[in-house]
Length: 499
Ligand SMILES: Cc1ncc(COP(=O)(O)O)c(C=O)c1O
Image (tube, rainbow, N blue to C red; front, side, top):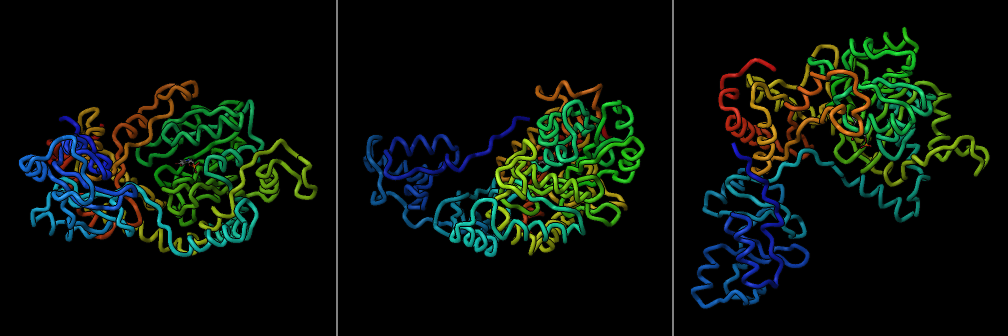
């Protein structure tokens, strides 16, 4: 089946003034038979259809004519709806025969569009920024406390430690440097090996490489998607210094077993919790079991600071060293005196200002995600050709990004499915690529990684933003199942065996 490409909004917009020829070319290029006329700020002026073009030609328009907001045949009172309009309201207009509806933000700018094929855009993950976040940032900007000093940094670190239930928290510029700082503060570097799963985001591996140590890629557990315990034994060498379990897609790794293995072999544990804020392992929040836990607050994470990260150390002395390393390695007692060749990994007060406001409502944010995941699970649990996120009685997923595995479909059809979902406004994502397959990481592979390759090739993540309304998820599922049956008719209906 051929993939249909996503129609970018840009193909629908024509800024006035424009020539009649430009307008016809735009109508031709987007295949929708319509364009939205906008001003230089993307504010809607009018709508123009292929029917309007025919009428204009019959009335004597020529290709070189300039169309402005005053041109007679521009429809200046078009139908439109606000961004975030209910699906039912969009359908009402479509059923009245409106072919393409512009969706406007609160400033009247065209930000999205609706057609029968594509009700609107559902982004895979969007941040939830509230009034308090805005007023905290304004306080930083107006008071001048915009770099890494100011009242919000300490407050954010404290609130985070309180939420986790302990640990020595250090706020940093992003989740990648959180990992790097964790490794360096623990004394891991050149000549050391760190065992890390092959199925992760590249930042886990990059942080190890930039600390000077060598990543050693391990396959993952098919039932839990996290590091395979047998792989740790296979890959252990006299140079192994640490294990970096990744709680991928918010799924807690087998921490007790990893700890037992690390203890008996004298290894450190650096937990990559970038995707796992709020996840629990045996009723405790992840991040406190290893020697350090590292979190990301990138804009797609469950709480955000734009870019940002946090390292949580178990040991107070290591945390003290990490604080110095974060700040160029400068002595806290003697300014400009360097104890180490350190880093500038500091978080800004503005980032922390957003973080403090997000922490104030973290339970509400995570509860919302949990509800979204429960709705997906309920609606997809009977579909034989899908495996849902792992579930067990010893851990709770963080509910970050709803991800499923497609079973029994032809190779490559997952990517066709993603393209077709994009055409219909559903922003879906493939799983992370196996690290060993990519050029910069190939040398860190040792043997085969069948499970990482399988999960990577067959996983697909669906929209999981806080802002999804209750009626949105059944709509997304309806389109998802429709497109799934189009790429794998037998698998979607009858179900097939895995792999
Ligand atoms: C598993 C994993 N590790 C590390 C990171 C790095 O975080 P950041 O993007 O904040 O540097 C990310 C996130 O994006 C991630 O998904």
